[in-house]
Length: 332
Image 1 (cartoon, rainbow, N blue to C red):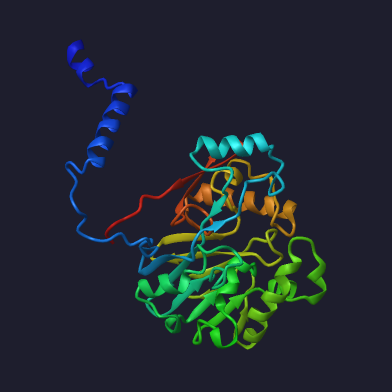
Image 2 (image 1 turned 120 degrees about the vertical axis):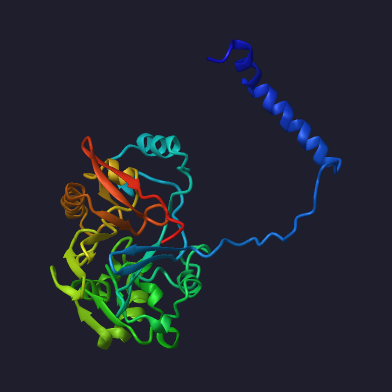
């Protein structure tokens, strides 16, 4: 057992630490002990690409960049008080003034097909300058857009389908498009232009999806759209919102899409109504049904909007759930 004097020698006080910091700053100002950096600062993030194995399949999470949604408000997380929202975020070192959601697109290489789930918001600054990075990150992963065999649209919100591109700027010339007819019909319906919140999405979504109509395969609940990839209807967030169960050699990954947008606020309070859901009550019921299944079967999930790269597990926790991020692997 160490004696008291030894412990005290290492018990640095905050004042001592601050004093030391001030001294280091003084030395720096005088140029003492400084060395020139061997490389210039890049002022750019490294490519956001994360690769993993799923049985015989190879998965890659590819970021389209973070979505900054501004202050976290109770009209988005309905049923929670502003105090609960602010304290939950602040207690977890997240800013209530800058609600940030990731865009974790998933690429599955089955050995025969390259299958991309969702496409981000695409170019343009409608959602801020940090988005629209899918194509650059895809190329950084060693994949050209023309290599993609299938693009699976989990639902037709802008941050999931606008990255398909428009006209001559269509990004995936050799890909079959998989989505539900319910979402295509809803989000290209001109009569919905007057909808509050969602109406402004209609015309840009029509411009993206309608020219690709001949490339589309409409997905049904329970359908195996490609070997090892099965659709699961999870409506509520949109009328045709679909999650996917991906299985290879006994290993399973559940692509939640937008069952939950926030790994804390929504997972801890799954009964809450989410402001971007077309049917918030159905969205909550679907969320609970799906996450009860995931927790009971101990499935690995990939969640589109959770902290990068969005891979982890769900466990029951009181009246809600706890998301446990999987350790990121540095070698396959």
